[in-house]
Amino acid sequence: MALIEIRDLVKTFDGHPVLNGVNLDVHEGGVKVIMGPSGCGKSTLLRCLNRLVEPTSGTIRVRDIHVTDPATDVRALRQNIGFVFQQFALYRHLPVLDNVMLALTKVKRRSRAEAKEKALAELARFNMAEHSHKYPHQLSGGQKQRVAIARALAMDPLVLVLDEPTSALDPIMSQEVAGLIRKLLDENVTMVCVTHDLNLAESVSDEVVYLQAGRVSAEDRIDYLSKHHEDPGIRAFFGEKRRRGA
Image (cartoon, rainbow, N blue to C red; front, top):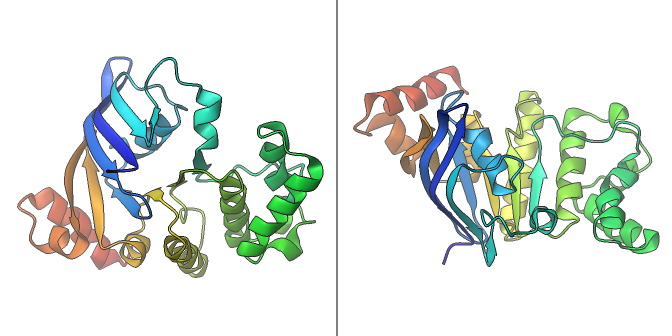
C-alpha cells in the first residue's frame, strides 16, 4: 500500500484547471520526482499535499490521514508533511538553531531543552551543528538548504516535500543537494521532489513523473522518455534538457 495516494485531484483558479485529475502513488521509503513544463501544476500539486492550497475536488490520503476531508486538522497534517520551500523560507532574524527549534517549541510544545537537543541532532546529521549560531545571511545556498531540510525533518514527518531544491543553487551546490537526497533515501525517508533539474532527477531516481496540463502524462525511466516515448512532446522535453545538460 502506498504511503501517499492521490486520486482524481483537481484544482481550479478562477475556473481555470491547474490540476485536472491527477492520480499518483508514493511508496514508503522512496522518492517520487515530478517534472514538467512551467505552469503544468507541479508546485500546486505539492501545496495541495498539506493544504497550503485547497483542492477543488479529488482525494489525498497520507497513510491514515484523509488530507482532503474538511474535518482534518490542518495544523496536525502539516506536522506530518515536512515542506522545504524553493527559497528556503528561513527566518532571517533568527539564528540557525532557533530556526530549527521554533516549530518544536511552538507547535509540538517541546521544552527549550528538548527542542535544542533535537535541533542540534538534526543539524549534526547534515554537518551544520557548528553553524548553529549563524544567521541565514551568513550561510551559502547549500548550507541554507541543509538547514531547511533539518528544520523539516526535526518534526519527524511522514514525508519530506522538496519544491525545486536546486533552483537557487550553482551546479556544485546542486550536486551537494543531490547527495543529501541520496543520503536520506539510504535512511528510508519518503520524499516527493519537484524539479526542473534533470541531473538531480537522474541522480536520485530511476523514474520520473511527467506532469503536463495538470495531468500525469507519463511515469517512466528518463532514458525511455527522452528517446522512445510515443509522445513527441515528451521526447522533446527530456531530449532538450539532455542537450542543455540541464
